[in-house]
Image (cartoon, rainbow, N blue to C red):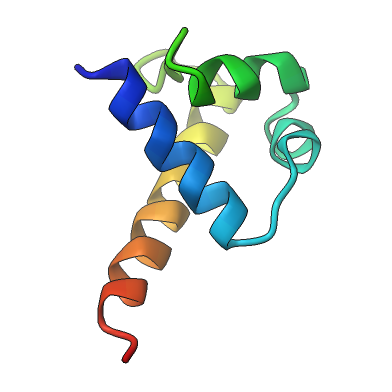
Length: 75
């Protein structure tokens, strides 16, 4: 897994959708520093654990994936 590449993707999708790191963190019930770590390639969300945060993360990344896919088809 390329943490830097994934971090850039998270950053770009967040910015493209007009979210701040704090807004993402608030929705996931984590601290903004965690979002910063993801974006800087110093960590990655753990979507394999069985807790509410993991489900929210999974949904957030699904949302970002859909937004990115749609952006590819917008002229």
